[in-house]
Image (cartoon, rainbow, N blue to C red; front, side, top):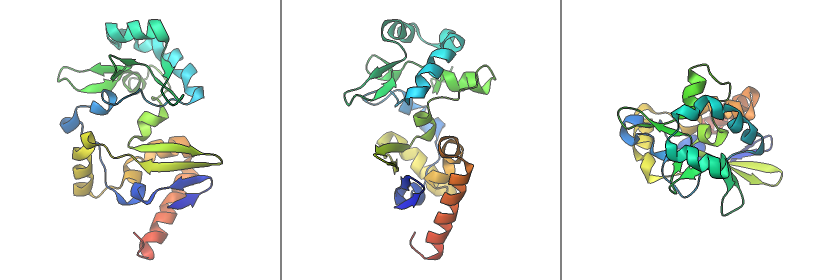
Amino acid sequence: MIQIDDVVVSLDVIREKFICNLDACKGICCIEGDAGAPVEQEEIAQLEAVLPVVWDDLSAEARAVIDQQGVVYADEDGDMVTSIVNGKDCVFTCYDEKGYCFCAIEKAYREGKVDFYKPVSCHLYPIRVGDYGPYKGLNYHRWNVCKAAELLGRKENVAVYQFLKEPLIRRFGAAWYQELEIAVEELKQRHLI
């Protein structure tokens, strides 16, 4: 592990390779799992603010869930997560003509309709941020549905932290990311990775 400021980064985030391969997985990370996507407290208001913009892109089932319980709920651990449909789909998922799943919020962002990209936990995936008192921990989350992403990452030689540069900067800042790159280079020069 390496530490930058109050963030401890698992070496798996640096060593493992990863590039999302939407053609292989079709966005399954938005529709599989046992809970919705983790949401930070300040993101709840942002999710509610973008709701009118993305409402028509959401399924009737998703709109019913939102009407009944809102955009988030507390999971078994008491963490706030996006609401889900039928125990799996995030309420913000949509499908294109090929059956690929995508985020309605991200779509609206890319079209210039909103200034909120999507929850940072989604943007950072497959990195999960753990809260350890005064420290945050960045861990690589392995999931069999992402096997194609691991293979593509190995083929292109792109590490998890490199693939996730944009969301890491979004969450921790450009100076923090630059420190991460410096730390990685030092580890490489010392043959520790």
